[in-house]
Length: 136
Image (cartoon, rainbow, N blue to C red; front, top):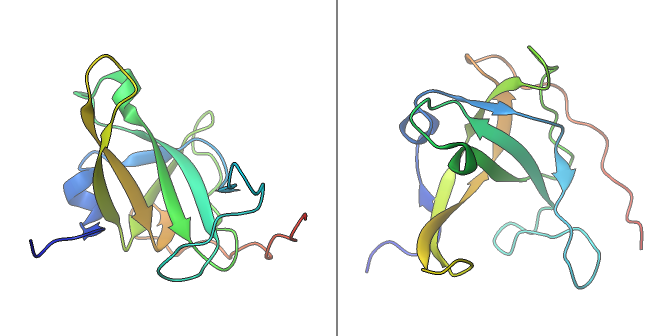
């Protein structure tokens, strides 16, 4: 098979109605080591941004998504536009399908990664925050 691992996709194809970040980027912490995860391909720290898919046809549970961003510094999402919602877009987006076996029946789920987050509409990305200090 020619396709293995992460599959490059365009933001508009995956999220034609856009997405809204619901909070700031946070370090993705390894459950066992209690340290921030690093990407196995790039070696960069991994951050996670909780987003909500704006597709009106998606059910509520499927609309809550986590997007991982590989970056040396913490990605900065724009200020909220209304309530906690911050319209964002992702550059360098990839998707990795996997089988999730948490319910009665296994189902196909998707893991999303990106290279960068920016305000929706093609705006320039906010300046990145300073690197997080290693707590351990």
